[in-house]
Length: 253
Image (cartoon, rainbow, N blue to C red):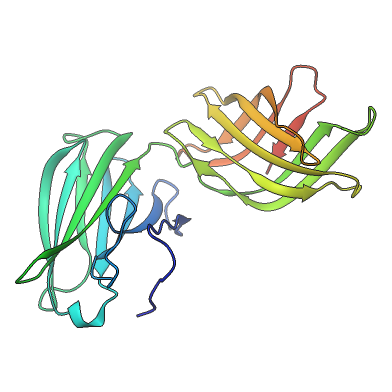
């Protein structure tokens, strides 16, 4: 099993392929508690796949222990939904494989928070990982090809920055961000660093702010509005926002 060495907390987000437009999956991985891990790597490395279905949310939970001397010990999972303990599971050599917790609408309706506490059960002490996450009704995590057009820092010329495969980060059920650093303009005359926070409304409108620093200068905060395309299953596929004067635009497909 490949070991991961340099991070205190490992968080890898990705989108898994699904065969149904009505089902969305996001997988995350965490090790340790509150940013700390055992120096001998005896904490479980926990993976949780959150799958949104029309009538429920499935949490597919698995774990392994990087320290090979401790792989024989069982792992106990306690699953909390909105801070309430709902299920406990055991994973062991005798009972291998992931466990599944199905969150029906009678328990919680997205968006909701959840936590998985994974404990390595050892005769002398317990090694713990705490995984926290959220289940959203929209999936605003995606990869985009983005074009940022800014009023330029060189006289009155505008500058265009093109960034491909830019991944969004979901901040809430309706909110996401995209960001990049030190991207050269198409002309090659300037560089830009951008952060953003954008909210998508139920009618497809988008609003928020982008912060852009050109040529290493201080960041300029711009209020933007526009539109976003969200599928019937809640997946964001594109968005286009601009300042009120139209001089600064961000278009992502």
